[in-house]
Image (cartoon, rainbow, N blue to C red; front, side, top):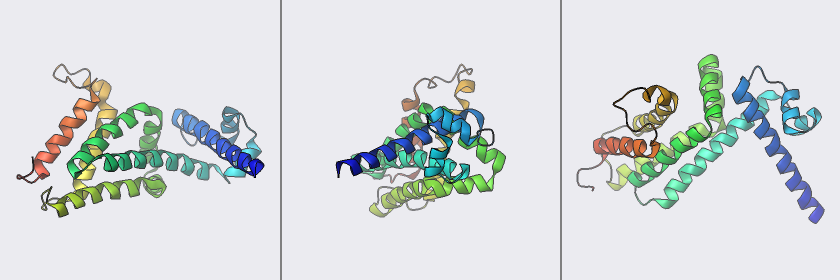
Length: 211
């Protein structure tokens, strides 16, 4: 039994090494420019070993997307677990979502570049990898807030979710440009930016009877 457990653990570690190497190389060079041989070399394993886990490069790329989506879903779950209201959950998730983007800039740039260059097929990959589920979960949090009477009922939860995620992506993309504007004081305080951004959203959608 111990040998079986060790084998499973080793298998999992090998898969994680491959995904980590693939994420790094895809982010640095783009999907098309990276070969399976290069990924194997970076991961310190044989090319044949990669094919033990992934039948082709597309499957490996999808695994990279799924890994990133899983970490975002974990952030959202943590926000729900630690928060009592929809407003608190949005605050908690927004702050941690932006920190997540800033901590993995190469991967975020890869996603954005792939969507711009490949359009709908790559967008479907991202949605299938779990980002559609994440978006739906955020929408459900807002819908629950509406049902509880915390939030107004006359707004589209999907629109507000788009605005929240979009505001973080714009900050990520434009941070160095914003740094050149003398009137912008929040560039190096992303948490402050997110708290203010979410509060402005909530002023428009929170019931007036709510604090």
